[in-house]
Image (cartoon, rainbow, N blue to C red):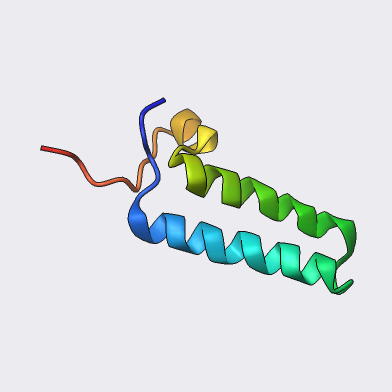
Length: 63
């Protein structure tokens, strides 16, 4: 797995994932908020399978 998630993208995924999980735990949005685990996992791994399918990357090119 080649990294395809860059720094700002990772930060946004972490914030979004934590926000969704927090809203679930407070009962605001229900069980669908557990989908927040997906952006957290992709941020932790630095790899997004959907980006691979679409041929997209936010990771800077390493020289």
